[in-house]
Image 1: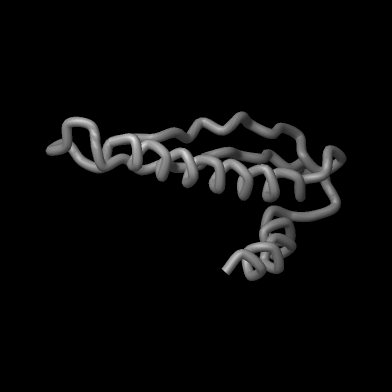
Image 2: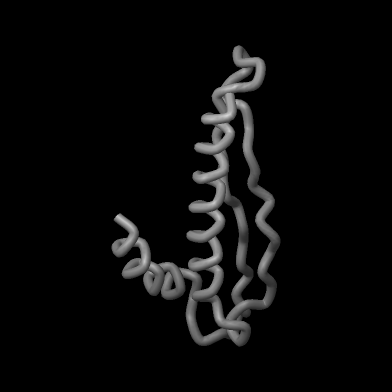
Length: 86
């Protein structure tokens, strides 16, 4: 079980680091609101007592309606970062 917990924590750390990188690309002057990560770990299915588990990262950014970039433009700006992660 300890190995699974260590592996899950590694996934959590990586997801949180990626999330921080993504959120950092939303400058204050463009972001009306940045929400806390409301993700977490969950059991993979109802048939499991405790393991396996998975982790999901979920965080949102509201852009100002009259900001310099539309949501599509903001997403397009993330493409180089996503490409560099593969």
